Image 1: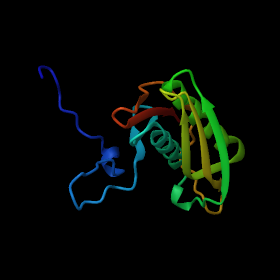
Image 2: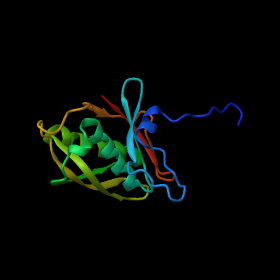
Image 3: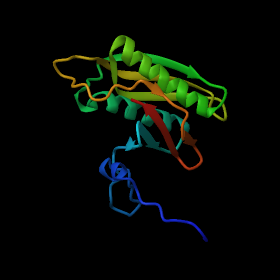
Image 4: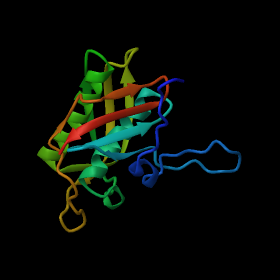
Length: 167
């Protein structure tokens, strides 16, 4: 291709294990979500075979910015519903609901099970398993102020999603 430049993976991607291998006998990494650096904010990414998996991954990446997910016990269940006019609006609404739950109740999720509605997806019902923030066990990481539309990508055909959050 004329004028095309090779795109290198971000350091954050490699550090978080976003590279996958389809080689026989090589295990696939268990993480399918993470964060990447931007100029002033933080980006979240997820990969997966369908819209529900992408939303689950973005949600877990959001919670991993707030606190260490390994220290969160899945002892409580919460249900979150979100909708949007299109998949992009759905992503912002869903992550906004998760952020609201964290800010108002201090709830941190360790596991998310999402069920999407519509084709293309315009609604989601998600079950979150986690617990309220406990200062004795949870170390605060980054305060997320808002979910943005800037450079948002939700590509179910290629199994990838990206969203930038305001910190």
